[in-house]
Image (tube, rainbow, N blue to C red; front, side, top):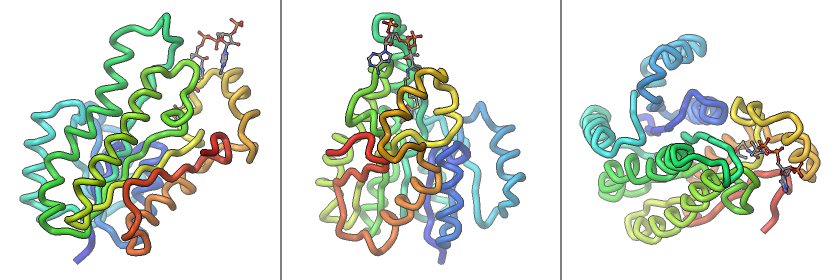
Length: 246
Ligand code: CAA
């Protein structure tokens, strides 16, 4: 039987690459998308010629605790189990702190951090019962170093790292590993939204002098999901072209 992975934000810049890399590795992918984006999700599915055996589209409001619980319990009944969870969905609402609205603050904390509670908790017990499962959280270089204009995003992405270490401690005795990937600036629509002058300033600071490709991030997800990574847990893997070295 194919292994099963749930990817949030699956049709996004990095999420699409994660989906394709895991399909190549033989997974069945449950592709979660924001319910408001149904039309785009279907378009993405059709454009990529996925079959229903390969990819199952799942509308999931990752900011809503109750609806996540209901959707994911019913998903587990249908699918039997999930081997790998990739918490990848994320948004930006960049602004200097003095100008940041409370809405910009909460939207980012809800989508990028509170979603970890909402999506992971309904699946975690079943992963522990079955053992040999993986949770991979997609954070950011900016959760490690802090970024001008991103107090909300940096806080959420740093919070993901603390969450990961704590859950890794709890999952370990069941064989559930929990890790973080911290991508740097990656060639996706999210980065294309940055004002050109700000992006130029950032690029100039990257030792490898270019953005990451989504496939460079997705390759690391495949590695952490694989049997080569069974002894890695609570770890943060940076993929940032040297922008921030710890
Ligand atoms: N450090 C110090 N000072 C900085 C700075 C920095 N990194 N960036 C800008 N400043 C300074 C500017 O030089 C400017 O100074 P002056 O007023 O003296 O000219 C001042 O701060 C205001 O800067 P802006 O003109 O940029 O201000 P703004 O209000 O027009 O824009 C902003 C603010 C929207 C936050 C803009 O700076 C911006 O887009 N910054 C980039 C934020 C960013 O990196 N977002 C990442 C999105 S992608 C992502 O998040 C994926 C991932 O995980 C990596």
